[in-house]
Image (tube, rainbow, N blue to C red; front, side, top):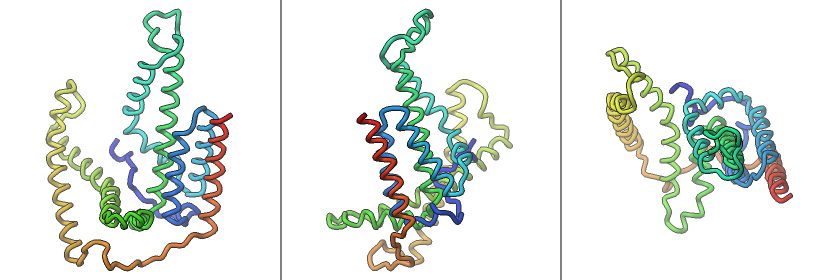
Amino acid sequence: MLKDITLGQYFPVKSFMHALDPRMKLLLTLLYVVALFLVSDFWGFLVAAFLIGLVASFSKISLKVVFRGLKPLVFIIMFTAFFNVLYGGGEPLFPQIEWLSWIKTDGVKNAAFMIIRIILLILGTSYLTYTTSPVMLTDALERLMRPLKIFRFPVHELAMMMTIALRFIPTLIDETDKIINAQKARGADFETGNIIRRAKALIPILIPLLVSAFHRAEELADAMECRCYHGGAGRTRYKIYSLGWRDWVALGAMVLSFAAIIMLRIY
């Protein structure tokens, strides 16, 4: 299950999406997220799904990779859908069956909307990290938040922390997998017993994982200090980004999709 988590990974492939300016990719992702929350019917979700299909095609990264990353989140998605059904209104979906009277039409509709929205949200945001390296994300975040420096906001430090956090997600997942296998080899059982027993069985995993995370953080801090890293003041850039024709084509497609979702919401 842990190996199915692909959040934060970068796939170095030569494709249309990889060649986009990282600032444009961040902007497109933001517009996509806003558009998803403006969707009011299934036709709007169809537009968003079509857009994800285009992104998957032009990025040369199969949708199977992203759907595999959804496996660890199935419980959260179903849990959210259950509460939408439980507290939904409308008429009973099965009026003839008394013990299913709590399942109502509006609740089922809201649950279906929530499931589709969460899946499309994860699919869209995952392609940002799949097609953009952590270094490029850092530069893009810092340049987009540059106006906040007027208010003495630590833009560079914040962008660096966010990127390091994304970068170390796959590393921590691999470390967790190794610890679980090591504990199983020593006879640990994580799959039987009640909830309390399973929670207690996680303690031999969490403690070594926390210790390992602190060690990695300390090593990273020492490495950055040895390289005379002191924040963004006076730092130069290895690569200067500029918007090209690919970026404007991608922005045009996103604007058209956004407009289509708005029109579907209005009419």
